[in-house]
Length: 607
Ligand code: FUL
Image (cartoon, rainbow, N blue to C red):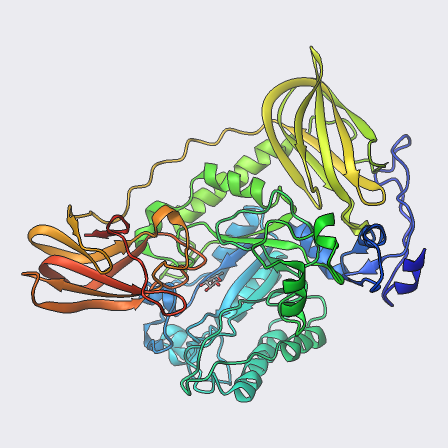
């Protein structure tokens, strides 16, 4: 029992009741040493010892509250809303910001009605424009015509949340393309701490602080080095209940922006939060990075020196982009797609952070609101009638043991829900679900991790009972709740037509690729869709596009970057400032690491 020596000082020992207050439920959870949020394994620990300790890694209180919240709304709003871009360059004129009809109460009320419990606002995106009248820079709402320069979007959203009983969080981009001190690391770190301090002191309780990882060079040509320790210390001092997300230590980015949680999703992970100085070394040793498919299995524990409670958050936008663009009003994700995302995020032990960007009027757009309401109604109908009788009893199960749940009579189900008692850690490694049908028991699902919630879609089946078998687990599995449901229908996804009219063109040449419209036409812009929707090392992140009337003399029509294409490989639509008369269009691209990108004819369209 060597591991008793390594209990962290915060360790707590709890005794549990049976979780449902009814006699006959499975009994109490075991007592044992618990490690809050972090374990350091003894250097000579065997795999069995590590597994035993891993079973007792538990979330901190703030993490547990956050995991229980399940559904958070992201609000991307700022100068990009008005420039119609995804990433600004920091040189935007604040005069463009004027959301005359801004009504934060409409945002928050709608989101609350649609089942969200928290709202995270982009107080500052990479362009550096601040949505509050900060004392740190004039590049803010104070320099805009909105509310006569006396407005404060952060305050309006914070108040609307307080009125509605919703939690409030802030996204503050460390990457700042406007700040003159960016790249002068100590100065910028001070500037950033000052901004963070304003946000964490002036707006009431903050439940989540979201730092994205983008980093660039400042005007002095130097790469900014962020002082994560200092930023984290500010959060801990000023808002101890706030979780720090992504570039933080409480909440982990799931690894994509497409709404996909892992099939095997551990909250107890070997990945070291990247803000810690030792992260690179540890993560190399364990062969993991944020996108790795497995972050916590026994195989991963073999090399691990530490283990972190670091649960996943799935951030995804309801539209192709993060900011509102009129042309995307017809591309709001279908209900079917949102339902899929729900199953692959909330249903895979993650919190869903769904982005709904307010429009240039300062309102949640009708197109998004309609879909949000459909999504909420679909969840309500689907999960209203749990067919499992007494599904909220806590059951303790050893590997190989099963629990049987009776179903209400006449049950036809196609969704099974399992919840682990994560207050005591995440322990289930493999499970099987069987249904008792008129032909006897038959397997309907199996899986690996469960965590806070696991939702399994199965073929519809009429059944009298469900049997859940724990095939493999750490210590004892603590199954908290079980459910079985019949999914409400989702209309088939509408096929969304692009919001531009492509012009037929022949492809000539390779890298650079040329499109030939066959005659002189009016070209308003071009669209670039990375092949297979996948971001590859040769994908273009920056472009230069020329047009020509005769194929001999060329002029540059546009150049720029495809903001955020690395994480969000949606079609990139670039409109020229004015339509041009030309026959040919040629594009050259460069990659993330500044090499020549490979651009193929089928990836380009002109319109
Ligand atoms: C990314 C950013 O670059 C995007 O613009 C967006 O804010 C997303 C949530 O995080 O890394």
